[in-house]
Length: 427
Ligand code: GLN
Image (cartoon, rainbow, N blue to C red):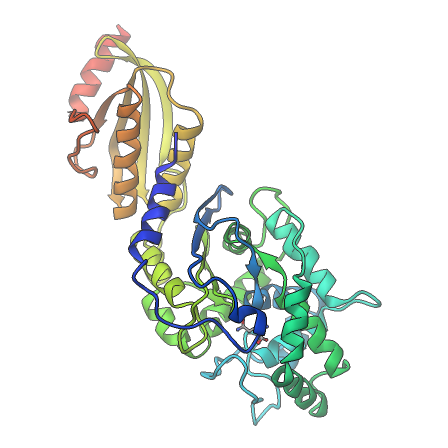
């Protein structure tokens, strides 16, 4: 059975088809020839299951989405104070490759713009071990597969990389970068040329949502404090000169890359990633921003939305006799948001109920977000289509009226009727 969460992601792709504005990055020759119509979206809740749609296995370079991870490594290695002395945390309001340092402190304004990212990259080098190799190992641990550098792309960026070289020399001259400027830029460019898919990015983002622990391997890759700190910097500086607009409209810590990817994190809940190569004037994927706006709205991801519990919607599963028939009763609870409904849908897709009769007892459910309503309706329709008899106990009518593909409506019972039937079945 196909998960309704995948159907939802397909809809995001379909509904943003009209967004064809923007242009591929052309200052890196290889990026200028990328297929502009590729598109993908993925999400991963803190339960660790990745859902992806579109060109989900298409690889593209991580680019600036690598910056937060290198920054986290630098903090873990050297401590926050040391890193703060060298790179600030103020939004610059400038483009990602601006040739400027803070006039008062002489430091790069933040680690998300290139100046700050070059310094950060240089900080994570260990004796005789190139920093890029270390960052790649980290990416592989995050994505649970070997992540590799696209060497052709890295060479292509270096050929036209005068601007980053200029920045590195400026930093070297002002004492902010000890390393040889050309070597630092070559390493930084390799870090940016690591090839990933939206699936990888969703897992990487999810690890940040999960406080630094990779949800499937259980490996702690960053400390809790580091992760919190990093997410704050992503929220204020991740989208460059569109950061303020982003925080109000989408409202999640995020980072974009010039190959067309954007990753976003809702702490405690979910990591999301999108890909589409055409960029807007700020250097952020135009269709990617549209997909993220849609995800944020549908999934209730905005950070400033009052707290949502991340616990599962499924309170218990019971086997009992209802209406004289053996039944599987799913008792649901609390607010149904994406991360809670996902756990339920995952359970239903993996362990299809063995009884013909399936009861969803929703009398303990408080609020149901639109996405959860749609997902649960779609899930119920799939169960009806596979021959199950469904009873919904839904006094608040949180799931709308609907019919399956053969026009059969689901049965709706009151909580009292279910209780009566359970008493009879048990006696
Ligand atoms: N490698 C790119 C650069 O330094 C990364 C920029 C980006 O993704 N915004 O120009």
